[in-house]
Image 1 (spheres, helix red, strand yellow):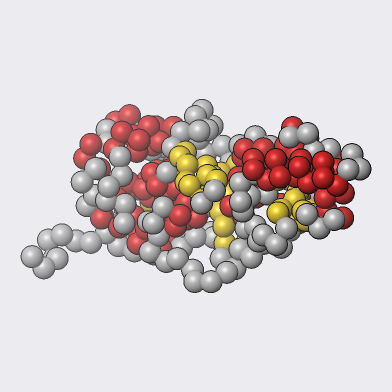
Image 2 (tube, rainbow, N blue to C red):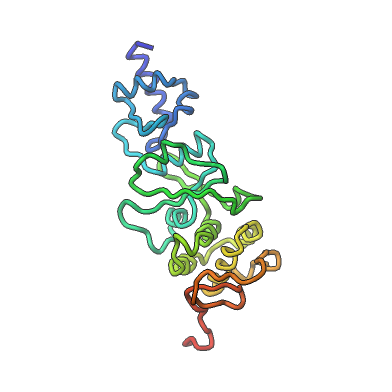
Length: 265
């Protein structure tokens, strides 16, 4: 295709289908009738720009990790989603939202699934951290929802699932005190979804911490959860040396359960 007018016509048609702010991968471009050869030509004429091998952005358009996640989900059909604290932040539940750029972004996928090389190699303004997990092996899509990001949407964890993902990472990259503060903001969780997630979650540690923190916060949805159907495992979980050991949930944490009898009225 050497006719500039025809090239621009195909480009205009392409841009009408390409969400603003999103990455486009060559596999998707092929489906739109844009061959690799034609893509290279568009880049040479500065109509598109390459952000990695097989990945492109509109000219003069700054794409961030959400635009890349959209491409991974919608164009490459990869089972990768935003979760843990990142999902809570995007849905307005996080107490500590880092200011400016350079914050950590938590992405999750199934075992043996990896983000494409162009995503891993690119220097994003925020720092993606990817975890392959089978936390909900029997129901990998349970508790996932969508978030509209201007011209496109991304798949991410609902608050109920995001909190369990956050707790599963303790005591490593996430802080116990932050976990307690995050749980304080989750007073409106859906008990039916909490029930299903707890029954399907494979992490005994995450489930015990989730229930302990919810009980400390006194959330109204907790009494609607049937703990008899939740497998909390056996034995103690010593997550913090020298921490406070909670007898009910048999787990050690850095904070002590408030004593209601000693609390002021």
